[in-house]
Length: 280
Image (cartoon, rainbow, N blue to C red; front, side, top):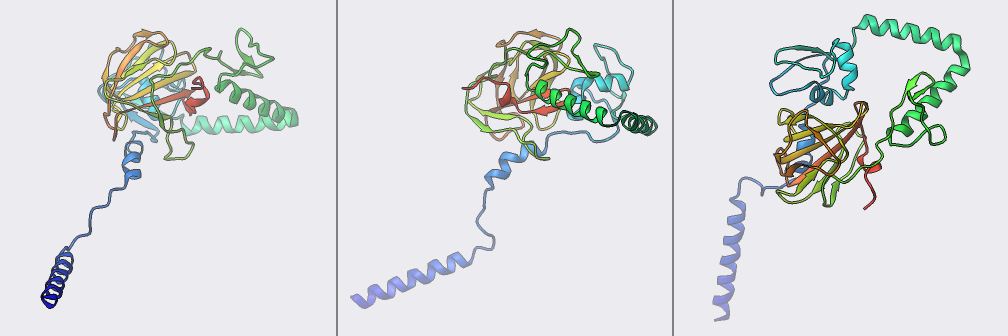
């Protein structure tokens, strides 16, 4: 009897081994991190010097993709507010090389004639610009009426920001080339998405790949905020909103899960939203 059991066990073992060896392809491996980063890598960006306007785009959405200040693009293309554009229109995204060279030559002459004083003033202006980017007051907490400091213009800070939705922050801001240019907040389909500060809706649509249903709000001449992956957009372009106004319902358009991707831009450049939002 014992001999029969041993023979049966041996046969079972041989069968299992042969079954395993018959698999010609390895078991599937899911790279969770790659899946989470997919939508970030696929987000549209423009690096060319010119661009042809596509249907559904605004100058603000183009400036967003080009990481540029909309005022710079408007000036470069001789446009005036409200910056109306149309499909097929050619938009210049960078100055002509001759102008750049002239500007560089002028800067060199200016720096040479100004000497050490000019360098100190430039460093001071950069430091003040960095502070102002994160809403800090300058000049002992007071800003002049025209906001001019050493020839540079600074904006008044937005006094109050609020969280655009409730949920856990699952991805933070990164300065890396392929890093997250905002924060990702997890939630459920249909969760409320609200305006983080008062302003005007300058883009509402799905023309930007990787952002899904996207809303961009202009808060003043320097600050923009964006709300991506929405299930439903509840506002229209040119609509004015107050801080806390409902603007969308959370979704997972162009995302791997239900969440809100939230960005803040200062003069066209990405900044860390957590430096603005109140502590939880």
